[in-house]
Length: 579
Image (tube, rainbow, N blue to C red):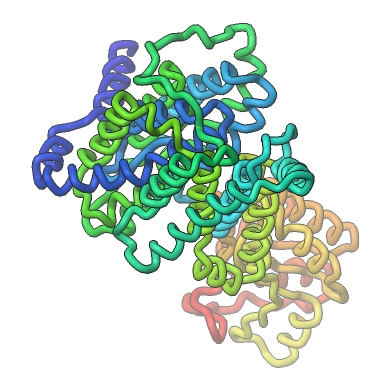
């Protein structure tokens, strides 16, 4: 048995590793992939620097993440087109962790999150991404865009970042500080860079205006000797030696919750980004479990080089697709180019004004908001609009993981309400069969049949109880249950309660068409015996009617009626076989 388990585990791990088909994809058009990778690297450089600064660990942490995580995720991930690195969404989560636990806490959290992602891949958890509703994703993206934009306000205004955990509070304090001593140079750089990016993207979408604007801002600051344009500062020439010195084993317990949050966000954003990449191309299909595995390895390795947790980056992935990438070689090339910059151009990168990077991220935040998608989502249904707004507000007021949880809970509750409303409890006409008009009048007066359509579960059960117990002026109630799509313990208990209440009023309750799955649930709560008459269970409605007539005849309510010939094809006017 143990040998079989080991073989299954090895087979599972092997299925997550790169295959020969990946190599074949790389060989298809390497020149095109190399060019796409170079373009993505130019776009990614200012973003990596900016997100590193925003996270609180510095620009060098952003570069290390883009190089190490970008390369490993490209090699081991499940998408041919995904580009990974530091992202705005992850930065939003990391800022409070830095404030509470310091840089070492962030690196430890990243390492723990990487292990969790590998475990999720081994458990085949990637497929569950499809259950995240679109309004949650749209609200999550809108909230992230707002948070990223607000995080850039201190650097865009040229003031030191105020203390605080809530981005709205920090932004307000930065504005107050700016009002005391305005730094219009910083504001000018941020606005100019953001404007160049936004206008340039509309004019020439394929041109990397972010790097053009950053280079121009750096040259202006150096030539004009603008002291108000504070630069990034010194950067190490190269990546640090891998080290586990940041680990504090005693704090692993307290860091578990932040690590779960980081792992959840990394999984969500990476799978979403890979899905977007597939949607932009023809013939590409990512493997969600392999993608989790690749992101896990990337997040295990990045902290060893001083990098922050990474995810798939939607913006950079989109650039990669639009510039013609065919394989994972393009994403690997992007990481290689950034590595060259780290080793060869660190002194030049260190002179980039922080306000210019703030402008890059402001423009990125604005471009993240897809107005058309938001309008479509809010016009779809009131429920979709509510989920979107709640998720976005929770992202801004709380944090991303809580926001996604709130969005999922609200979406689930609204979906259950919609399903519960589909459950119907309708009175149906009794079968006339061979009865005379007088006999049918007696049956109609003393016997009533109800058909239950749809699910009988906790969200719909109590409405059913209310309607059923209001039945009056009858002696027998027949429940036609062949159309009950699902039933849970709550539904069975409510049904049992209703039957007991009716029996206390002298009303016999019979059931027809009980399915095997329903029988098990009803029997587990003791409701099945209550629905049987003299130990009999009725398969069809005509049989239940005969049982009701026999009961009323024995009680003296109906005259004794001799057995009737019943057509085997007895049906309602609008249905097939009466059950």
